[in-house]
Image (cartoon, rainbow, N blue to C red; front, side):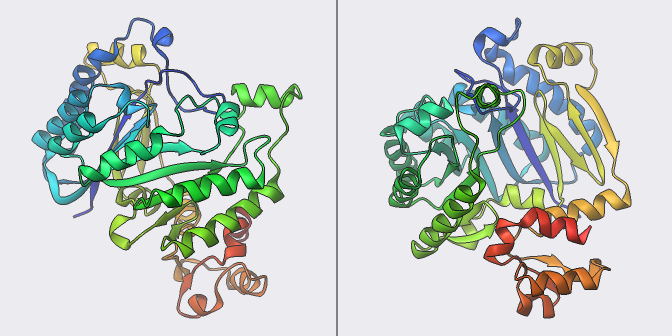
Length: 374
């Protein structure tokens, strides 16, 4: 029986960061939707999912993302988790994660999460340098990150931090300070993402007007290489292009499920779902989402059935990102594989054993690797 995973999208933020194009809303953008009604709306979508899924498959992982899930009271997140458990059952040893802003959690909040069934927290650190956070329009205080991590560890929660590199005006020294600060936290997991300037964001407009410089791709590559070396020296191993873990047990099982094309149901405004090659996504705005549910309708905005070609291309795109590699038996173009070995983009020894595993150079040019294969 295939695994099943749940994603809960909490689309609320205190302020909108200039680089962010996620489906998230501040209090003044909710058009009558109340954050306090989130659990009730979730429960309605949950009933729809139960009619589709039945009760045969337990949940192997649950991830609360956003937005900022910790904008809601801890009791709301625990109520959502309880409803999922009552409806499907949570498998023994399942990973239950929430993203968190280091400024709006404390020991009492984290204790409530742990008592309610959460076992992992991912903190949005982004940078340890105030000027970089200001450019990104992040509002948290750098000093609160170690406090939040300490409080989470006291509750025996697994911990992770997210970093972003390549912000306009971020120097290599700035990045080194952030990496060193993240390592000093001794978390179980670190994610480090290159900043992508998304069209339509405030940051894109600032760059287009010449107010801020574009990210330097060569500098971003140098930052990735430096961080990878530092993480390795600190006992963190890369298992996906942008993710490093202290052990196999502390890898993000939920994200690995995405990269392996597993089934998941995404709850909440704008959330995406995937079941057996069928993919759909919800309407984005919370008020539109609530309106559909009030009429007894699915909040679905649209859907697609993946073709065999799409399934192949997505498998290559996603599994090639993993340190465990892509099964080369699905690749017909053996000349392309030979070329990737010759260009030091994939590991030759792994390839001879039937796996496509990216070298460090290949990780920096992962998009090129995929284009050659598909």
